[in-house]
Image (cartoon, rainbow, N blue to C red):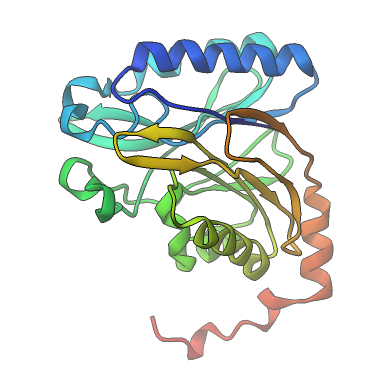
Length: 261
């Protein structure tokens, strides 16, 4: 699995698209057997929210077309981070997922909008948790950045069968401790892998720190990036999820009838 921890040029979708294409090419040339590529949040426009209505991709068409082409060309699954897209005059922060044949297998619109970056002023929220699978082998769940502060979503996805939670993000300083702690908590409490791809670089006055992570179901770090642009490679073993859930049967010991809704 490859994480494209990259910088993003705010308000420049053509530049960002070319850069992502180059990173995918580099990753596949380095390791042609790569199974999954993961990209960061809002990689096409960045947080150019005041101009997002003009910059957003209508129905994600332009970005979806080249991503489908690249997935099929390199025979690689792509968790395409998220993009700014416009659908029925509403702007969404949406994750698309493509399989090795270039088929679109999932779309998830970010459910929780981050007020500290004014998302709620410009974006519409998604209304549906999403799970998906690659080749029918195992189930994954979709989450975007701020979503990880809501454990209910992670648990809902785990109960729906997810063994891996994908988290594209634009998570900034000074909250590195929150980032690492929340991702580890989601992995431990749900006994699942968490695969997060965060951006780097500076956008206006916001500094993004990277530290993309793959965390296993025990909460152990498989791989962690630094604070610069880099292509990270790590491995997951979905069978470990079953092993951990068997040893500590959290899901069997739940008592949902006693919990407040």
